[in-house]
Amino acid sequence: MHVGLVGLGKMGASMRERLRGRGHTVVGYDSNPDLRDVASLQELVAALPAPRAVWVMVPAGQPTRSTVEALGELLSRGDVIVDGGNSRWTDAQEHAEALAGRGIGFVDCGVSGGVWGLHNGYALMCGGQPEHVALVQPVFDALKPAGDFGFVHAGPVGAGHFTKMVHNGIEYAMMQAYAEGYELMAATELVHDVAGVVRSWREGTVIRSWLLDLLDRALQSDPELAALRGVADDSGEGRWTVQAAIEAAVPVPAISAALFARFSSRQDDSPAMKAVAAMRNQFGGHAVHPEGS
View 1 (cartoon, rainbow, N blue to C red):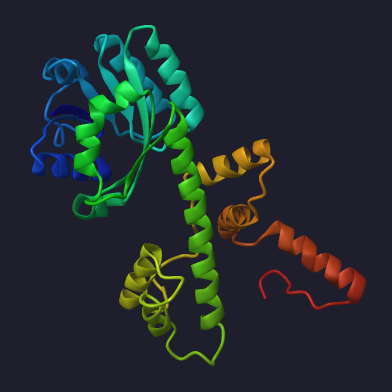
View 2 (spheres, rainbow, N blue to C red; view 1 turned 135 degrees about the horizontal axis):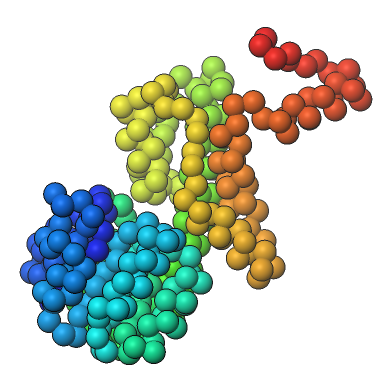
């Protein structure tokens, strides 16, 4: 199958390589001339036979909106755009509605697996009309892991990004639990080999996972994680998960706590904890730690 791929960062480039390795013809466009196969979106569309499938792999928000709008002007009735970035599900619904008047299909596809997907395959969660998903199915089949798992047509447009959002919210909570367990073991003199404990958990335990494997990998190269600062950013999907949970009146305490922990990680000296220390001192005479001590 011929497919256009817009956005050749680490993930997009690895997807292009996997698709080509499985016999698909990929025409790639990127703003970086060293990465792209064609010099413009116009050339990319012209190089694809109809009906065309163009996969967009650029940052969420305005970059994706601009790219989808530009492709909407260039593509024809019967073509399909796939948004494989981490866009908000409501953006996907807006794109689909805008493109429908031109007869252009839209599929939103959450993609998990990172650059490791080149060899392991990517977990794909897509949303869209059945006929639009069917047009791109050969691409999905080439990108997904071998076997029965790793792909789902989750529902109509929006369902792909919504399920990827929930996936990432779960990821937040899992990483936070591993991190807290690591810190607790490292805080006591009882456990002499924290990295060894984490490594031992990789087989036979009920908490084994790929995230645990990655933590072990990090600890093997830096047992005390001394080369890293304790700061973790959030991509936005954790926030969207909590917002969606509030709208649906669904309790997500673990995911919420993990998101707020990331916010706390960015504070060198938490104003909230200063207030807690001040109150403890006022009502109970508890010791405080003066600035600079």
